[in-house]
Length: 420
Image 1 (cartoon, rainbow, N blue to C red):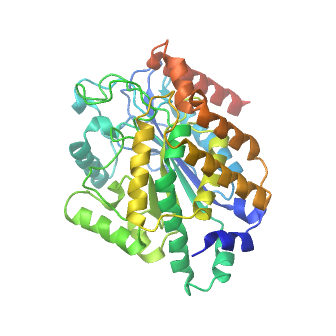
Image 2 (image 1 turned 90 degrees about the vertical axis):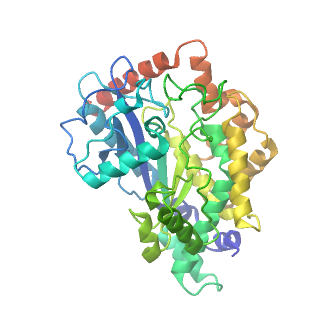
Image 3 (image 1 turned 30 degrees about the vertical axis):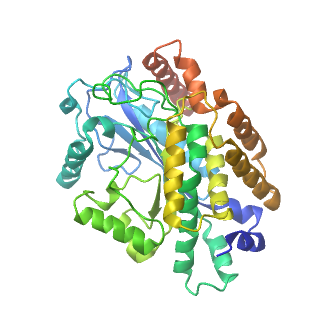
């Protein structure tokens, strides 16, 4: 399917930037001194809230926006849900700004699993604790959900003759995007990775890297399944079959336990894909941005949006599985590079940014010039990446001290801005 030609025929600046967007931001609750909170989920919040939830642990907040039709609306939602969460926190508590948790208890059993009203949800988390360990489950990140404009998808479908059903056409569209994202995601890790070092007791003994890296969370030390968990993106049928088999063999406790950097989504549950087909993509490899009050900023969201469009625009490898596997390998190298190292695939990164600029020019998109200029500079000047900037702040001061100070600033800033 020649999606690039279809886009040229059908897309406009308006329809290309429309779509459906959603965001989930995780974060640990900590005390004013940067220690993991010991209090229960804020009592002023409803346990059935859909906007502010608990993830694995009782201290682990998950802030969820509703689905919006623009990035501007998404950004406003994200600011509002952060205000609600920070306003509801127990006095003196903060939201930790890093993906890696603050210092954890010496005994992992003292990490409290979320006290949820649903016994099945608690049992599932207990299974995760056994399979991966409680420490690894304390890692946080941001998930970005993206669906192309249904109007544009309908126009693309009408302009082609290969597929007779729009559901099959959409599956092909999102599968191509997912494969290319998995292959090229190293650039996102390079630019936005921000987990160079961990705090005490995240690793047991000397199991982690012995020097700072770009993104522990996006490496094999991060939030990943076991190496035996392999799922193909060749087709939706194979993707679902692989997950079903992994669950049947007990290698996954449930379909939602597949921790891919990009997941195919049909609705709230993975199993809905069987009846709905692919409706949107969930991007899961985003470290929290410690320099942004809400864990991510609007420039990152705009870059990701354009990057995902580019994943449909670009050609891909002939063998889908090899293409994705190669991307996994590229990403591992970048994630475990030092914060101030240039990417090994520098020229490929420059080609990716050139393709993004070509889309901006082709469709007359505005507001992306400065974002792409900043990304291009960071390719050759790693000190401009998030990891580089964060490393500069913590190389002379304890990371926990810097993170706590920022968490305090973000708490005050959010409440002051929203109350006035």
